[in-house]
Length: 581
Image 1 (tube, rainbow, N blue to C red):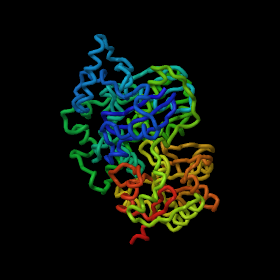
Image 2 (image 1 turned 90 degrees about the vertical axis):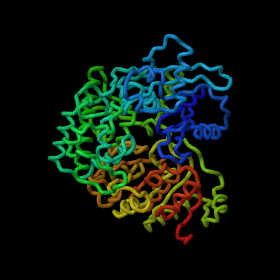
Image 3 (image 1 turned 120 degrees about the vertical axis):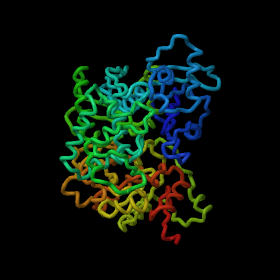
Image 4 (image 1 turned 60 degrees about the vertical axis):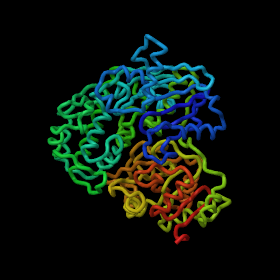
């Protein structure tokens, strides 16, 4: 059975094609439109999938959407007007009402039955169930707990429950004004950044050196401004406006005064970082981490969880700092986070839920999730270079290509890679990446200033062979983190050898690559290992600040020539910028 999953009508729209519970293709719309966090309907992603799979739209058996509009339409809440959606989204409600006079507003899913001739039946899956399914059905677990947290779904801001081979059982839900995502978004805005967008900047700030006395003071403010209520903190309306759309800011003047910030600053175009921002960010990360740990302990005990396995999804779990702390704790034996836990991944999650829970498809347990689900490059990229009269060197064997890349790395060149199928999600995993050696401390500042054009405090992720990770990082043998979903710590004796990927507190958002997989990046790391080098590189997304990651050869060429990159690798070609000057 072939299901088209969609995340549509909100930021990070995407499309995924799932056959019998397997991800065949998935892409986000921003890769085509070149609009960061694009919320337009994913027509391009759908057409790319049809082309890649060489199928017609008529061959799709069902469509799944990670949002249930009938649930949202029935709620009476002032936040609805503050979350505008496309006009045709609300017309879906008319389609539901025309088919039934007895709709249950709390259904986990709703359906529009079509004639089946031009459009298959459409299933609208509740937002947080799509999140949960994105993790559960890509995990290697037969049973376990699940937790989904973000700003808000149709009604819920989070759900906790248990799953097994056959069922997803919701045990606890949170609703506004209790919201982990809203809390994080509000403080992100207070610190001068864009909420629901720049949270990872704040996460990076929280690892910088802070004033302990001020951090403790601000943690106490957060405790006073919230209540302990289930899986997400209750945000008191004296301090937060997260469910008051008529208010200009997500925080009140009272909270800003208590956090020593009576007037909001705008840090979006100001690269100067103030010590106060670091202290508040550290306090927020500490508070929400401690809160979520306590909440998980409480609800898992109440529902007799064996605390062996847990699947995490929802936008909050882009927070790799929390994810790493949970894995290092003894609360759960095994932790799984999908490569795209935020809304982008709900195209996969909605299709997975529909297949397994509505159409009752048989579940297949996986050893690992599929990371590279996008388009492949053209078979002859040299034609594009010839068209634009760009000099290049072509390689018949990958071994020779890898040897030359290694040579440029040793010369401390910054190299961009555009090779093979693109990765799904918001993190570059080697198919569309910028790499350079991690042993030069100046490389962090160089890439931030001359290529990414962003704040100098923001760290870069390391990529390492899975077999070697425990030698250089504080992780166990066999540690896996294929999608940069967790933070680890660099071993103290190697901090001096890996300064460009070591953050202020010794942490690193590590990506591991299985030695047995294929691909250009793993071949480069293996060659480094054979040359007695530390097989660790900087790996960051191949894009400029404010732009999506590159997708095509044309995207790669444009970004190469508008930044400080030294070398461009496209499939089996190398382009050197100094050959063009």
